[in-house]
Image (cartoon, rainbow, N blue to C red; front, side, top):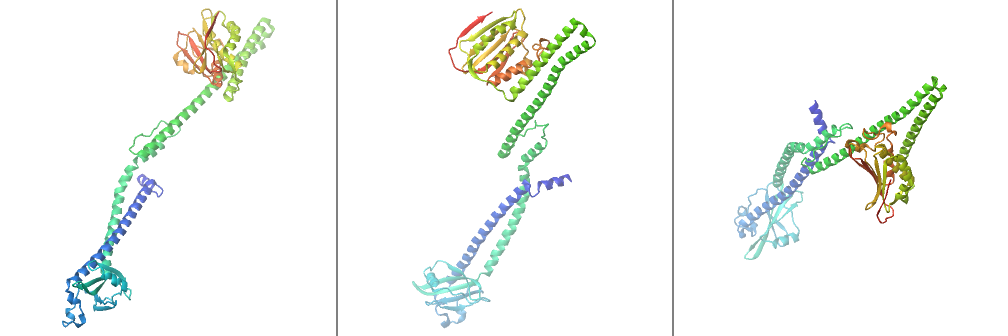
Length: 493
């Protein structure tokens, strides 16, 4: 039953197999018809001409005297020329174009009469076969041969021999029927021979159909064989493979985006739950009577204030990230990044505490920037360096350097460094590594994400170089502004 269904499905009128087979057979049939028609016409001309040559040879085989005034011949009618065809008629044509029938074939009507011009033209071609297919007065089709007879260079008479074309047409009909039978046989053999060839030819396409049937949204790893021996199928397979790769990448990106969103919601909920839980705990303590103890009340209020500040900063960072993701608005203007760093230097040294801060600034560091947003970038990177360096032995270096077509801002520290496995995820939201950001140091893990979004909104890029025990270096590349002579200006503290 399954085999029958597959056969019906493969040979439906709108299937490719049926269309290829039917169209191939139609082309073959048209070629056979053309060959048959050509063969019929060539054979017809050959048979008629061969018959005419036979009649001409018989006419020329008789003595010339036999054609002179046959009715006055003393030998009588038995001596008149008789061809080897009982159904042929013989007539003599005089100079006036009048016919004198000297022999009439059995069941053959009167011979057709030609025009004087045709008789005159026949006398000029003595050895050439001259024949025509004409109809007599009764509508019977006859083959007419005209042959002039001369004696010593002088034409004696013009002999007209007529015979029916019926036997010749019977031969042509038999030839035609034979060709038709052979053509039908050729078509049948063609069908039997073409079926396995067609099936083998469509094997790559059938394989592609089965492969497509195995593909769904959860299984896009299937690929079509690149080389199947057919150029068109190979090109189709290559196109399908490219499409599948793009779909797979798109589904993976969508899956990753959903996973990131899930992690984002979970992390944001966790970050909000921690301070809210603390505030709730302090409120419970106060409700149990601690509000009547001034010192306990003050500590609880200070703790709740700190947690509320943490919530406020988290919400502010989330709103800022959402704004940067949606449509970052930057008030870009050509400015000097060194001026921004010098302006922030007192604040940075205050944050550093006892850590050593070094600033190595290029003589000219102009770029297209939003000064307020760049201050946030510097502050986030510097705060990250402060968190991961020793309070007494820590060294933080801030430098600017002009490249061929960009300006680099680098923040380096001599902290514990970051493991290689954490580097690809440092700029993910809420991401923390064991050797870097921790909740004890404050922050929700959004600082580097905000920094990356601001830098990209400037048309720049940020990357990090770090290894355990070798410190970390965050490098920001910004499009250059007005060019200037590069130099170095150093200030240490």
